[in-house]
Picture 1 (tube, one colour):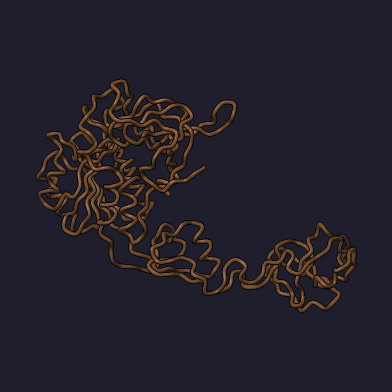
Picture 2 (cartoon, rainbow, N blue to C red):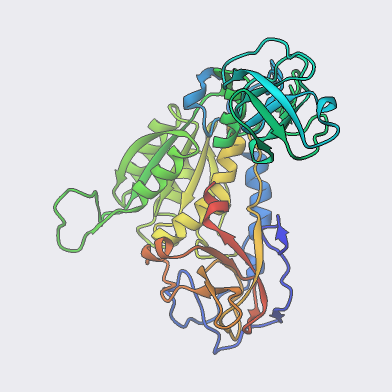
Length: 445
């Protein structure tokens, strides 16, 4: 199965053409209903072009700090790390069995006396010629021994052992430095630490690391209709889910999140909140207020107080995404619909934030899998419908199926799907066509 590192990969086995069929099924901002063809995608910024611009221009933060290893997961290294010791630091047994000289068991079967027992954490005295030592997994090989014969290939009691299988030097022995040699470059500056990396560092005896400081992000919701969970819900209002979803995504980076509250649909208040926050955080992320409605004031506020570098992408869902700066503070304006906000964050904003932290911004890696559905023709924008993987009847081969509700307001579709499907503009799909699938593990990891 081929992996791709392109955010707009060419499809193999799909049917692409110019124009859009009036019968084409549509997803995204239209709520999953039929919609007339909008302005052509040439008036909108393509997704890959927007990513290159944003990831290149996102300001890198300065500052670093010492971090204890137990709290270092997700942090970006500020300096290279080299192994201070060999791992393992000594030759040890890979199995339970008997340590011996391989030359003492050239011809088998052979019986050797056993006069010592070595458990993990212990060291044994030098092994005389013609003897074996009972040894357990992880225990240091005694001086003189160069092999271990596993207990399944032996017979005997506590005082002697009968070797039944031929033994060669190095058998079932982990040599010093087998995993890592002292001085080896473990991780370079800019690497974002994963859980498995912490195990490598811990096994090398490293207790603290130098990391780039945490990114400070201000999170702002906008809209008269929004109510925070736990508060009474008045008529005509809805509970806001974007703040909690985005705050959790940011904390996983990890970043420090400042709650900027909820701005009403009023430009003066929106401008005041943005200006006050800009001097305190590295980045501001807002949801809602970046479209073209009369009550959408975020874009105008950013243009009045700073600079808007990008607005409106050829993406579905999430076309109104905005990118700019308020002084030295980066600004991302996400759409208000929950799916649009989530999708644009994981595809575009999250890699940009990793770059700001000193890491590498990269497009998510996807998988080519066969479609388990048909589509007459997609629209003029690149689409990212929510999808899951199921086993095809008969073959058991995994195939992609679409969530039944592709409305950009149906946040539940994010929870019950396995990831996002990539549909380039004007693409028709037949069952079995190979399509690009981006699993949540890749988008969120």
